[in-house]
Length: 430
Image 1: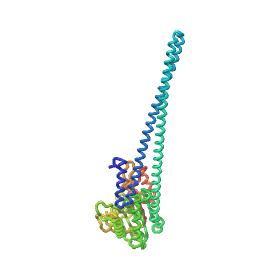
Image 2: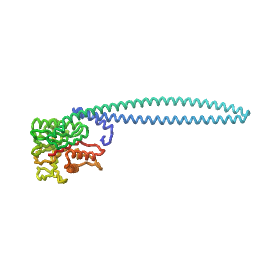
Image 3: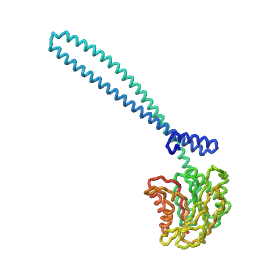
Image 4: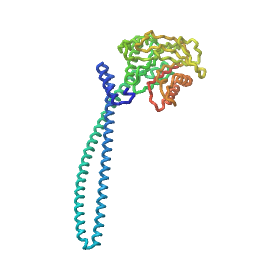
C-alpha cells in the first residue's frame, strides 16, 4: 500500500520491519537488502525535510529583509518631509521679520524637540535592525550546519553505493568466470551465436555447454529473479550441471534435468509447503551428435525452435509448426514440459525427445526476456509471434549477422525504456 501511495515514510518503516523479520529468520541476504532500502529511503526523507526547512528559512529571511527595507524607506521619506517643512518655516519667518520673531523661536524649539524624538526613534530602530541581523546570522549558521549535514549524508550514501557497486562488479567477474568461453564451442560447432544481455551487471539467465562422449551438451536457462539473487541461482545451476554431466557422465537431456531438479530442491531445502519461496529455473537443453546430426532435447517450461527448409511432418511428439514461412523455411516449435527445475505440484520425469535433423538446420534456445520486453510505439510486449518472425526472416543470414539483427531489433523496440529482464538467446547451426 505504501508503494501504491508513494508514501516514503511508510515504505521506510516497512523495509525496516522486513529487515528485522528476515534477520530473525536467519535470511541475512534479504535482511541486508531491506535494511539498505530502509537507509536509502530514510536518508532521502531526511534530505527532503532539510530542503523544506531551508526553503522556509530563506522565505522568512527574504520577507523580514523586505519589511526592514520598507520601514527604512518610510522613515527616510519622513525625514525628507521634515526638512522641507523646516525650510518653508525659515522662509516664512524671515519674511515676517521681527514681529514674528517670537513665533520663530517657538517653532525652532518645537522643531528641536521633534528632532530629538526622531533621533531617539532612529536609535531604537537601529538597535532593532542590529538585533534582527544577529538573528539572521544565527539562522545562516544553522542553515550552513544543516547543509554540511546533508553533504555528509550524501557522501555516506555515495560510499554505500560504491561499496555495493564494487560487490556487484566482483559478482559479475565471478559469474563471468563460470560461464563457458565462446571459443570453446567453435571447435565443435563453428556456426553458432550467443546473445547475452543481463538487465543488471549480473544475470539470472545463463548459458552453458560442454562435450562429453563425443556429444555436445548445450543449455539456455532462466533462473528465478535477476540481479544478484538471480546470479546466485545461475552459479548454482552451472555448478550442478558440471557435476552431473562432466563428473557423473550423464548426457541424456531428460535425466540431466531430473538430477538437476533433485540438486536444486535439496540445496534450497524446498519442502513444497504453503508460502515457501518458489526459487528455481526454466531451461531447454539439447544433446547434439554433430557427426550424425541427431539431436536429443528436454526442457522445463522453455521450448526449442528449429528452423529448416525440410518438411518434418513427424519430427517428434508435441511439435507445433509455426504458421509463418519465409524463403521456403519453416519454424518448428518443440513444446517443453510444464514444470520448472524446482519443487512443483507436478513432479513427473522430464520428457526426452530424439530428433533426426539435417545439416544446415538451425536450433534456438532462449529465455523469456526477449519476448517479454516492453516497448514499441504503444509500450507493449515484443511477444513470441514477433520473436519467431524475426528468427525466420534472418535465418538465411550468417549466425553473426542474425545475432546482430536480433540485438538491433531488441534495442529498437526497447527505445529509451528500461530493460525489464535478463535476455539470453542461443543459436546453433548443424
